[in-house]
Image (tube, rainbow, N blue to C red; front, top):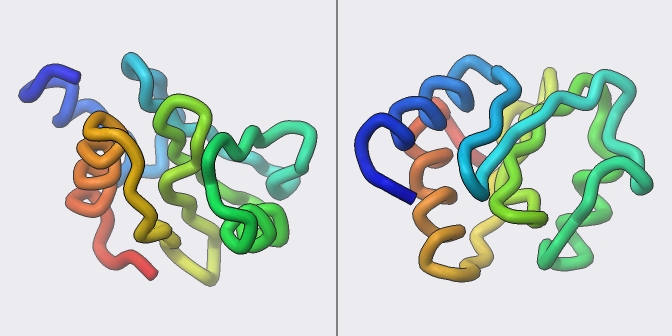
Length: 104
């Protein structure tokens, strides 16, 4: 992913919980909670899949490729698992971490 305007666009969207798509990173809001048949989980470890699917609505999920790398729920705030994947996904994780006030 190119530095600069793409990073700013992603950071701004994540910081305001706005749905977006930019290359291989995207975010969407699930107003009825995250349903197993709606939210792909990619390479997310099983314990985090369980936590994500148990999240209450509304849930804002940030994906890198097909893997959720962070999510926000009202009341619980942000969750960003510490697993590392590819260089690109690690870059996306860094953008998200820099865009949110606090991450669990």
